[in-house]
Image (tube, rainbow, N blue to C red; front, side, top):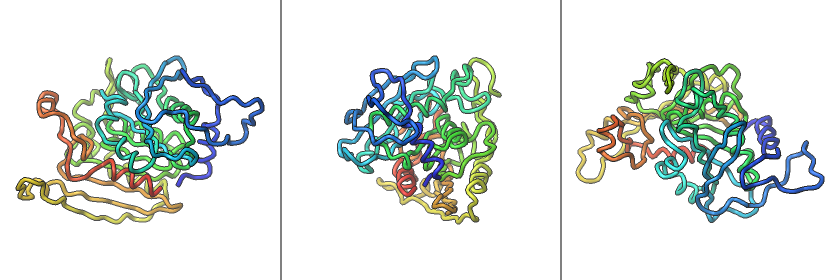
Length: 340
């Protein structure tokens, strides 16, 4: 669970007055800005909805998904899902199964859109957002505050996940804010410094054959040193070292390791391919009820495990990796969030 500082920070953020396109803060002639405001009545519609807001000099967009079975009065958890480079909020909503997971798990989902389909996560990364020095941390804070104006959120149960460039932003948010109870980057890394992060539960999922954000910390296949019109500084630390640094932040004991092999796929698979995708969990149970966990999938590439994935033609044309079938990332991540 987040620290009292985290809950107070989010409560104050939620009570701030926002200039949101098409949505204004509740009217109260005598609000006390020093006190957390009562839960907002539901204004966000059931289902999938597009939203706009202005952050600094930029008009930004995001999507929400509200399950129809959410309580009208009980504060709801919120999961932010951050798309990868060249993706979008709509693409993430359609690709990774979070709407269906929200239906069964009982939470609200927000899908922010990056500028130029990219996120600014640190020096030279990534794309137009980094080139134009977009403040994506401020944007995500504004999305949470805007959502809180249209939904009764539980400030102690706000979570963030993302893939690739979105996973990198999840780490940047973990470093630079105290708004989240847990973060779950997929195929991401940390770009830039993270000198004084607050303790936080972390679940990291990564394939050992990822060429875009290599597991061993070597530069990714599209790395260009963070230069040019589309800067791509894809040169973060080795994933095991990154996870070790979070264990140190959370004052965790030594982790325990377990490994499993997925069952053979239907249709006569001999198990040879499945055996290549051994799933290893390195888990540390830490003070304050926090957990730092690394899930690695042997032989898996740069993808969201368990997702339908692109067509074979797109895989061949764009040199993409097919999603691993050894792990269903979305329910795995939600279970981790639900426990924190």
